[in-house]
Amino acid sequence: MKKVIISLVVLAMMSACVNVEAPPEEEINVAETVMADDGLFVHISHGYDDPHRVLMALNMAVMMSEEKDVLVYIDITGVNFVLKDAEDIEYSHFPSAHTSISKLVEKEVPVMVCPGCLKAAGKSAEDVMEGVMIAEKDKFFDFTDGRILTIDY
Image 1: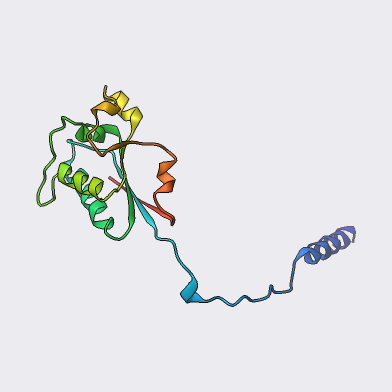
Image 2: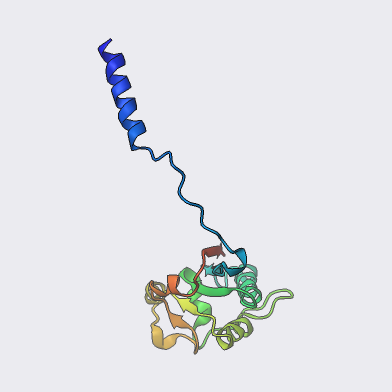
C-alpha cells in the first residue's frame, strides 16, 4: 500500500511540473525566414598514391563552390601535392590538381594544409604553393553560416 501511495505522490509531483498549456502561437512568415547556406568541407588525405581520389575531391570542391561555401583540407600524404615544387597530378578526364587548386584559390575558396602533416613530411609553411594556407582549427567552422557537410577522400 505504501508503494502505491508513494507512486501516486511522485506521479502527482511530475504532472505538476509539466506545462500542459500550449505556448501562444507566433505568426511565422515563411517568405521572411532566411535559411543559412550549408557549407562543404572536403577532406583529402591521399596524394600521388591515388590520383583518382585526389582529382575527384578537387573537382567536387570546384563544382560545389559555384553555389556553396567550400573549404578544402589536405593532410596525411596529400600534403606532398601542394608543395611549390610538386609534380602535378593528372588522371582520366579530370582537370589536373594544380588547375583545380588555382581555380579554388582564384574563387577565394580556402585550401588548407595540415601543419603537423607538413612537419611529418619534413616540410614547412615556406614549402607550400601560393594560395594554399596552413590550417587553423577555428577557420574550420568560420567558412560557412549553415551546417557543415563533409566529403572525405
